[in-house]
Length: 148
Length: 155
Image (cartoon, rainbow over all chains, first blue to last red; front, side, top):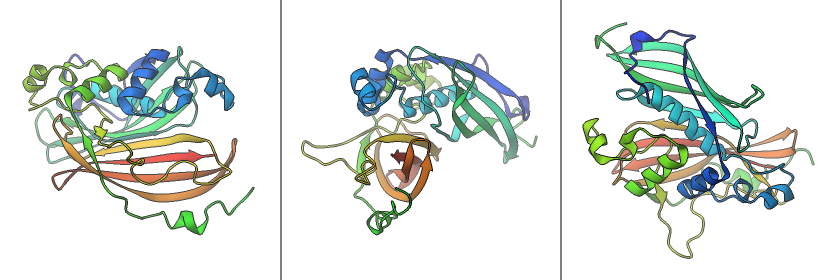
């Protein structure tokens, strides 16, 4: 969790937001299957995953989406809110590997005391490849409650 | 196999309305989701912490829209998103986007209405594939609180 509130006046386009690193265990994938209701076997049944040509268990796409939600939440809490966020699943990710969840501010606009911040968000694997690119818009409080 | 994957039958699925599904957002579901993601802000776990931060009840973590209510024998709700073509037996999640109009909270019974907004054919590294995009609007009473846009790949 963020130690202090980030205000819209504190951010500039190009700023990186604090990253989080996730490393899934097979147990976490099972917890996710249960929490999300996605019981597709490639996420917990190695034999099945190999049968359909995968190298092993695969991290759920929607879990990676939730990781990006976690990244945004930690940055904007307590007073910010998520307006929208999403990502594409371009490459597979695997358990027991570090997934770096990162983000960068692309645009800022202030409307009626509401600071809207657009970001690129993404997950990269241990080779530095972006497997999960996305974008987000969050609302941050203004220090003055006025125009930037 | 090139072209012609999007048959008139599939075309007819686009825009069709499906019966809505109730999603129950409850405290246990919220905590299970937060634990599975590893999101440890106490507002998703502890009602006193949530109230201190101005939430009447536990808020849902990003992406959690509750658990669909299904009775024994119910068919999978909503439009078909897998196995839309007999030769494309495998499927992958292509992408997910959430748009929030309001905070989803424990106790909500969201009415989820889904339509397929697009079916597109592509050729990728895995061969021919269908990209099926669906849009789900979650309503509390008559207020749209969130919209999900999700793409599934059949290949």
